[in-house]
Length: 408
Ligand code: XIL
Image 1: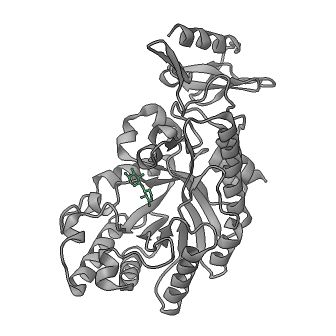
Image 2: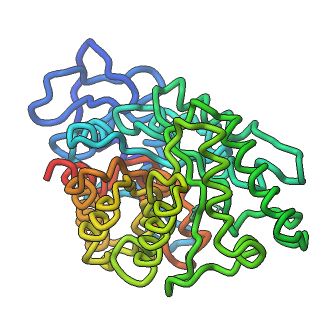
Image 3: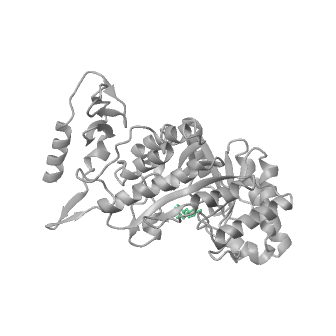
């Protein structure tokens, strides 16, 4: 703690004080900065680098040092920035940068339990950073229709209302997915007629509920295996591929203004799975089934991006549909090092510039902006630090990579 207090005192010493006050997350110092150098109550002007000091909520800045001493051994907290580690230097909001590059939005996923974290919500609600929100869980089948015919919209409503208050778009996520599917659906032993009706009712009901409020819906999520064959979930096993058109038609009827997407992972670069998705889109178009976009989740590993992202996105937009990166994060094996964070910055830039280069790539969503709430550590053992803000809500070099991607 002594070390914490000392470091913090040193950070404060870098900033000078003047009369006006900067808002939380605003700039409050740095070489060439002529604006306010003090922060509103509840936030502290915190040195990030010689060119940039930022007003951070007092709780976030007080824990922003990435080493801790326990029982005499010092350990680095892998997902935090330290005063010696590289930090973000860009001074432009991600959504501002996205729009300047001709995109509709740069967005973030969120989840309802996180919305009690006021420092987290303050950044999420900043529409210069995020122009779009995706609910990470609260519109999924287990949340919206936990038992047959009993619908629950409260969690989704909370996210939609937050986005509305912030002037942000919403991507609905999702209608039909093999995961987070209640057992009444997956183990109900329904025949084709019954399951078709269940899919239609589910999609129709949830899409209707938020009619006119959604930019888009992931109507179908993850229909393919990695080798491009169809995933043999209850929908495919019972209805063959017809569940896709049943769901898309129900969604179109329920909200004609919402863009209807199919969303998947490992389709970002060309390959068997991307080809299967291309062929599905072509088939749907030939059959007159509504399809407006394909979502590329973008759950990547640092240093291991596919090399064909731009060409692959172009293959999809050539079909006359739009595309979006819908769940971007770039994970690493922990602990995070300066070298990994530098490579992660490059990788974020590469993905963003691929989207920028493709006119029909309309936006990018990060699968939550901070390591504090990333799904990665609990899903991929030993991995994490995948997001552009660290677990203390401080911006990482990846943030600058995103800005550079939009400005390239
Ligand atoms: C994840 C959520 O972020 C987690 O909170 C949840 O426990 C599991 O699902 N692909 C998707 C998302 O389409 O819905 C997943 O979200 C991540 C992978």
